[in-house]
Length: 285
Image (cartoon, rainbow, N blue to C red; front, side):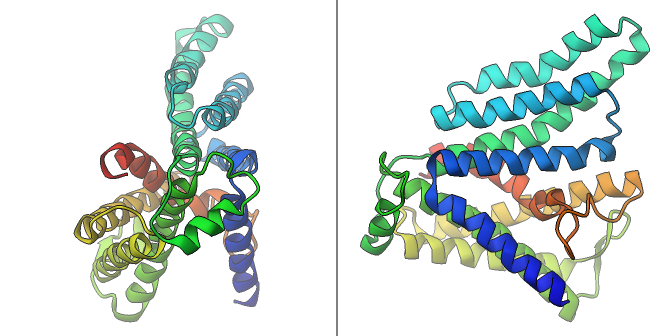
């Protein structure tokens, strides 16, 4: 338990510090997180072709760099084309046997699984705009790479991150305390309906508190609904990784973080939440 607690503190510190700094530091940090997560994902989905794995890593790296240069996602079609069409073209050129081309679909899916949240995270953090709370605006302006006035981006990223973390934490605590009804035992036997409901409530309350504390221009009721929706999407992301691990016959995606497993185990819910939040930003920000 002590080791797990120390690791948890380290995860929070290392996760928040680059987010506060922003700019190329955050872009590089999250891209590295995505690349490490992809490394752990490869054996879970059975990717054995080194050339396809290398191409996927290039696509994720390129997504991180291009989104940092253009947070609004104008280069997204380019990286999507590389992620989807690249593996197929490489499979055809390098392995003309039709049986060998089946890897392209798995490679494309695995690449998008971590490429899209990379674009989402860096895109959200790079949003330009001010917030209504003076304390948070001043805090953001004091950060080294905030020359483009990305206080709104920092506020939104922290909101999304806290929704994911606190929803998952409260779901665990409620499920462990009062959970009785198994949610989907075939996928994750320890998750309960009561825990899920507790997580949704925590997600909604977190969204409202973050919007008010950071000074985001969003009605509290809309924030509540947004938080609940992101909490539900995060649960799907968590269960999705559980399916992959169960089919691969492993408990954790890796051993990188003592007491916690791999990097992918720590961001499984956040992957889906980031993509959903990034897609919703034009409608709520």
